[in-house]
Image (cartoon, rainbow, N blue to C red; front, side, top):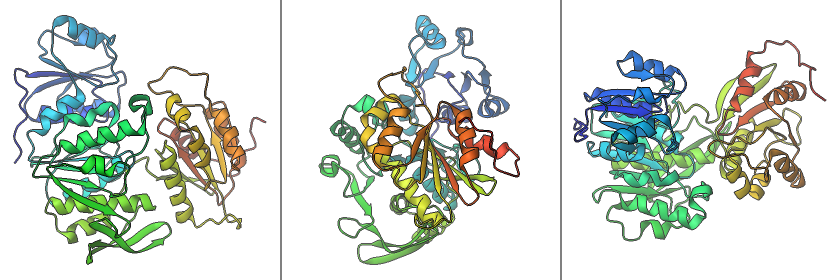
Length: 478
């Protein structure tokens, strides 16, 4: 059994943005531990409705009036600005404020076996994998994932055991607050440069995360990640390596082959065969994710047989190469990829899984891409331009700004032009409606459409699937 969460001097806890994918789970954990929990959000989402139904007091929208004098602590995320009305009034009232990541750090102290899954790419998928493995092993884990599992549509679960499986984001150094028993670093890449500035600072951030792992625990890491020695040198915990090659990896993949893009492989520990996995998720990147998950399961004492069987039946995560349906003979998928490395991995998996060859006219891969943030688009501009080589046609919609103000120095039009200069067939359209109209003309039976990006580009595919047409529309803006 896990220990109850102890927030000294606090009984009434309020969450700003309680409908968020992480905040909602934290709110329920505290509620289940006997705290009086309230929270606000700007949208009456299904998550907010569910929290209200179980007894958590919810408010829509965010408002200063939601902060009563009885509240002992206010939880907020890094996205909340100081002029937020609830943050501002709580400050004026002298109510203690705590950032989400710091709260998680306190909560994890109540768990003997917290596992934090970090990395520039693949965190959500791997956390989901490990969640399913630990559930199949009967460990009754608490789970927090930055996405929704296909298994049951949930992004979190409140368990009663000492196990906590959670996704660990590096942005704003959030994961520095946490001291896991097992820490996973899937990979390290130059991302979130609006915060880190350069790859060296990214490596330093992951090194700090690794140094926080409990001495009796373990770091799971690839031996060829940038800065491997910087991250691992001097660690008190065990270092367990994984990879696709035997060299430098304790757990590695042998006898690899693909069946419609889905990897089948033997998991080896040094020279010894441990288990065979037929992974139902496509791509080499997911094989690496599965190896990391297997290594973590091994450290947690889960038998190889149970871990491998669970990996063979992984359900996956929404918005990670998620099949959405068929529109006039065109299969539509959606993926969260928004970094050049992720785009290349995803499109490679699409081509392997479809079996499309460029010289054959059996079908095409059409990619509708929404760049995510002006900073990322500028910082990786040349890499973005070269990352779509496995797509036959690329359509770009305007950049999703997220937390950033408009920047006229970068645009999807510029990126489309650069993709064309690198040999790609790319166009830029002004909005989602134009994208939908373009696709109705462009798509033909046998094609595959993948909507891609961390914003709301999936809405274009969803709208196509809601359109009941027997023939391809010609109602297109020329």
